[in-house]
Length: 381
Ligand SMILES: Cc1cc2nc3c(=O)[nH]c(=O)nc-3n(C[C@H](O)[C@H](O)[C@H](O)COP(=O)(O)OP(=O)(O)OC[C@H]3O[C@@H](n4cnc5c(N)ncnc54)[C@H](O)[C@@H]3O)c2cc1C
Figure 1 (tube, rainbow, N blue to C red):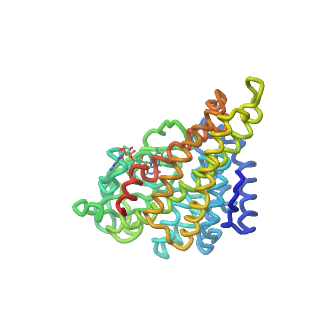
Figure 2: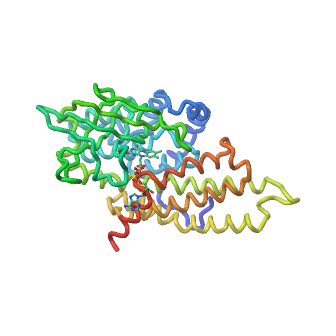
Figure 3: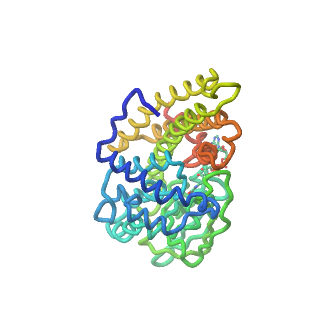
């Protein structure tokens, strides 16, 4: 999409990095994407390749095996994944949502022993918050971790876990003291191949088909104290901080998917002829596109400013909620209108707009539903 207000966030170095990511996606991801969708998962080899390429550790410090860049490098990858309709592998979840928890809250020993595997792709990470009984009311989670000798014993279940089948590590939210409510939550970095962990079905979804999504069960799983991230009962504070970043990541991805949809739709409608003219020539098409372009142009500087604020740690939970709410609602509307302008072809899976429409629908649901975003925003009114 052409912007009247030029984007000023990125340097030439970022743009060179962007080009290399785009080429990597075109050469090594897109040719295999349909087969990954059929398999319902992405293979470990592509994670290792992404590790070699640096995608997984763009902002992991160099001493822990990463590239040592700032969040702008993460944002470049998120934007290219969105632009190329690559909903899986969930490299953004792994590298830009989960890894930062370890960077920010891990001890030196934990960072040295965990992060290099995250950057290389030898470890694939998941995050386990949602439970079968509910996801929005996170403080009510039931999975328990009971202190026992020099470690903890974990029991419970999680659901809808992205990467849940292919991952070998999970950042798991548990209750170490249920009597304290949200103040009794603790986080663990757990080996998913440990005794007592089992994985349920690969859940069938309406989109994100190359992304595995799992139910996970924990039956007397032993974990050492060294695998606790942060202090006991400090999990809620850590999670709330990390969720700000997650919501921003979703907003960044959503707006770029919507912008790409506009380009695809302009191109398609200028090509497609009916009633002796192109579909683009109908006033309805032009008006729809004009409205959407105006909305996107208005919100692009807002998103870029949020990215900028995040670089200095100044995105509040309320601002992240506003960004996630506004952008994902707009993106969903844009994708739906763009699909409509494609006619029947818009409903065909191999046409990018169809896949984007289905893939992006979940953006209003995960990372906290948009209704939860409204609660967060309204608390500050
Ligand atoms: C494809 C996919 C991938 C996911 N990946 C992960 C993952 O990797 N890790 C993870 O932990 N979770 C993951 N999730 C789970 C996701 O975060 C939850 O689905 C989400 O938080 C909502 O929880 P829920 O599904 O239990 O819905 P519920 O909490 O049961 O909500 C149902 C409806 O009620 C509304 N609602 C709830 N509370 C309120 C309220 N107070 N006021 C008004 N309305 C309310 C909700 O907005 C929603 O519309 C994933 C989900 C999907 C679909």
